[in-house]
Length: 133
Ligand code: FEO
Image (cartoon, rainbow, N blue to C red; front, side, top):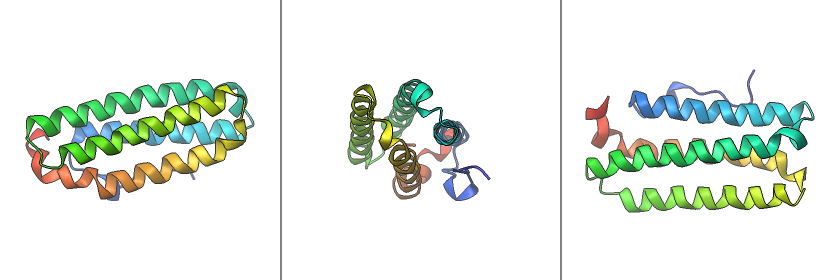
């Protein structure tokens, strides 16, 4: 069983965004797997870099749609995205310093952040963006 499995409870009802969320779930699994196999030290910086770039691109997709449909909670949602990117930057700094003991924390943080964000924040835009399906 994978560390993190996407399921229908995580669906926002918009195919494009569900697909992007699934990719993020896969990336978190890759990170966890690399760590479990003791490859964290070699692969962690690359995985984190790719995930960070992908998350930024996903956030940008959501923000564009929210703006397009004049979603009323756009600003607070965007702020959550910014805080997440900031957190990833902090992880990157730790990794660059050679502090890889935080790997497990990273995988757990990413998983719980994504679940909470999708279920608590992303899902709220569904009724506003449904036209995009
Ligand atoms: Fe799917 Fe708001 O991130």
